[in-house]
Image (tube, rainbow, N blue to C red; front, side, top):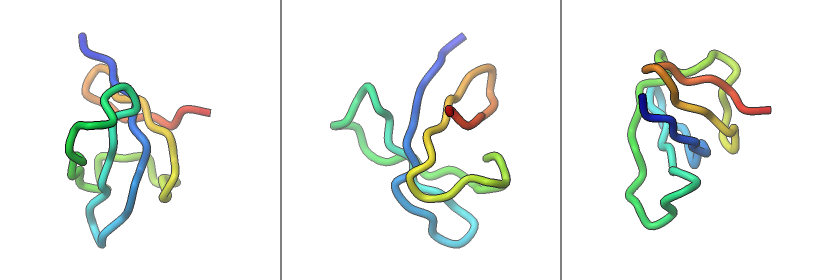
Amino acid sequence: MNRFEYIVEGIDGDYAHLKRTDEPSEELKLVARALLPPETTEGTKLLYEWMQYSIVE
């Protein structure tokens, strides 16, 4: 299963713009905030694994 790390670059209403940390040249990924942990804010580091997002401490 794929495992990716992201940083929340911005939040726009019900959506968050995520940037992969290992591929900085890739475009931002638009994700519904409902799929992210409720405490997610701009600058939060996220781990995507097994079709779930979790916060990286």
